Length: 147
Image (cartoon, rainbow, N blue to C red):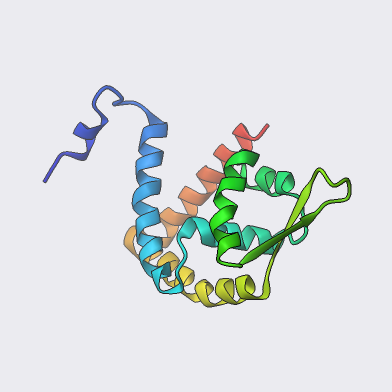
């Protein structure tokens, strides 16, 4: 087995590198559960966020996701092609609002139990207490860097 720390090369103390690696590995696990629904964990997160922010502008949704607006716009294109989301003109015609379509709401509803199963598997793998600590630490990190 390859020593995982050897993969850090010139970045042995880089927290960002570790977080990105962990995020990729964790995403693969969630993706495996969501594959049956035809969406990835990233798309699931977008659908869930749009559902929680129905009718909000792309800029507002990007802000909620801590994501660049242009990156969000690129990530919305596949969901639009699948007809899971629709966009409408905003109040001043320069803005676009985003909402789930009935098909998008149906997909999100069918994916939710798959996501819950992936979440329970993760909790079992590392322990519920560890997950709660991790989430607390990540929330703190997000709070610190979002200001």
